[in-house]
Structure formats: C-alpha cells, structure tokens
Image 1 (cartoon, rainbow, N blue to C red):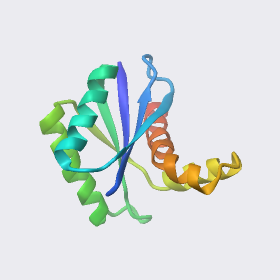
Image 2: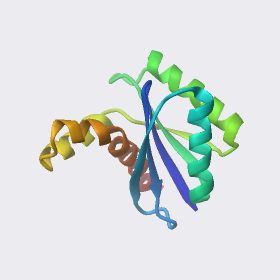
Image 3: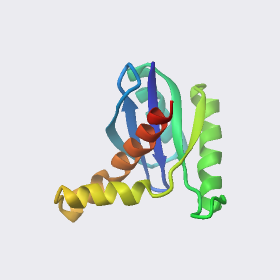
Image 4: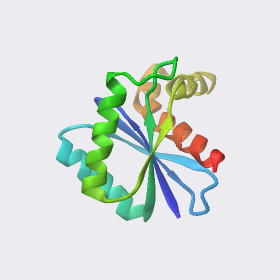
Length: 135
C-alpha cells in the first residue's frame, strides 16, 4: 500500500510518497507545471513506478475553513487526475503546511534558493504525513 501526497499549485506540484507500510512520508520531487496533459502523464509515471493505490491532495482552505478560488482549481485538477489515472483521491486540509515547511527549512538554515526549490515537496510531505497520522 503506497499513498501519494500532492501539494498542487499553479506553477508546481509537490510530491511525496509513503513507505510501503503507510507510516512515514518522504518528499520525492517537485513537478514544474507545463501543460495539463504533461502534468497528468508525469503523475501517472510516478503512480506506476511506486504502485500507488491512493492519492492525498492538499486542499487549500481559508483560515476560517471556507473554500476559495485556489481550492476550486485544486478540486478541478483532482477530477482530471481521477479521469486520467483512475486512482482514488482524498482531499486533506493543507492550512499552514507551507508555513510549517518554510519554518522547518529556516531552522535547518537552508539558503533562500534551496528553500524555493523544495518548499512544495516539503509541504506535500507535511500533507501526506498528516493524513498518515490520522489513519
């Protein structure tokens, strides 16, 4: 059982994968978004490579719990993932995951350029680990 975690943004998609037992999440890549077809093909390759049976996508809610325009973009893209890849997708509240990822990288004393390159992958790891901890 492998679970894929996604932090879907307009320019990038952070990607994390669970260990086979579903205890821990590890960041694996950040996909630079190009075209929807290419993005979906890239995700399918990752799912096939790791034998993914569930996808968890971060859902960017407002601090008061409501859904905004970015939430709708993520929901729409997840519908396309379902059609293209045919793996169940669960939505996970991602409030403050990017903040937590940035804080962790600052504490690790990473340079601004390194932080910028991996923040989405780290955020995907936080999303997936939160989901794994809940189950």
